[in-house]
Length: 251
View (cartoon, rainbow, N blue to C red):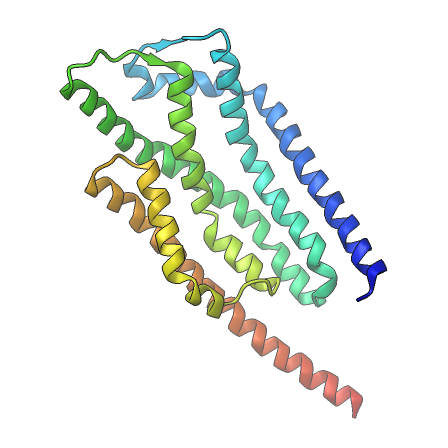
């Protein structure tokens, strides 16, 4: 083993992890300047507009800023993380593969916004409606703490948003030769179990809600497998053409 090369890779990995953390913190701090606008938007829409927001602790305001800022920072942090992964492995790729893999990063930015929208406008209202109906059926008084409300919101929105990144991340990692369709098929059953478990954790405890969230997750996984096959086949074809050119050059 070439220890100097290993140490060089380890040093580069440490540096890239540092930049990922730095960008996450910087984007989180930047997001705090927009938190008031986001809060007013959220408060003006149901279900938030239908309930009174209460603070049960002096730290509830700070918690809200942290919850929202961390969630919003993902819009920048996730594509930047993919860019750092690309930068770490690009030396092992051909020039055409580097350019092709780099194109997936803007798609990751778009998909995470779509994921945010789907989670907030579809999944979250469904979960909130179920919990409030359960509260009313038990004859309980609805008094919501603002920190608890946003904790509930982010616990739903963040996992769903990340799930929407699955196809582009799989295509990206396939292009980087880290994943391939065979590996994805091999771990399909385990992946299904994990996705269904996540769906059950973030959706109301009823069969219809579990199915409503699980099916999009599973569909996203199957789309990821399909996209991985497309990328992998094109990759193998280009490998063959590249090998033929190299052999021709050697002759």
